[in-house]
Length: 279
Image (cartoon, rainbow, N blue to C red; front, side, top):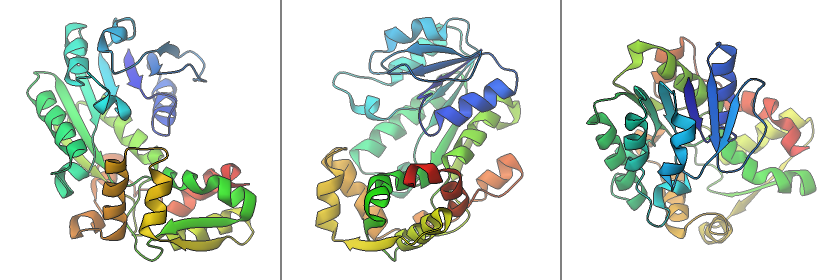
């Protein structure tokens, strides 16, 4: 049995489906109950309280570990999740980390994630680590304004990075959970092309079959909007990357191709597949 945390999110949903389609027994874990594929067990748990994972981990052989706000919840120690998994008999953990542990290692979020990576590597478990860059699904931040006004409002309109489709992250995660050859692998995951916010707006317009106007925000305007839904430190870190990506953050990684045997999906494909969110 394989446990998937964050199972109702942009990565967890396709990962849970892929594992179920492969004939695996799957337990989906999320903070709140939600729709999961037929035959998948669903457990509500808060990763900031690892003891609550015990029912989900019972009988599990592998764990996909996705942390978001749980990484910095008051009093939380994500390493406890790995210890709890090992104590429950889990043999393999696939950790969703971030490319930032390499490209911008000094931030608080990346320091904490790198420490968790190190702990996993030293745990005695089988492991693989995924380090994605920016997600194509971050474009969903624009869904409301596109639906209401056919506008994408974003800073740094002509500065691009190689964002990745979460479905590709899920596919790589599935391979790492199911195939022994990926044990000990660290994979940097990017899309196939550098794409700017203005070009993303054009791809959304193409998917919709109607024009979408691009409105350039100042950094200050973008920071104000972002801090409504994330810590100010994370918002500013994100804006640093979006406004002035380093050479490492512009690099198109071969790792998706290496694991899956095909190139990562372009943003236009993500937009077409998710066009209903923008209608």
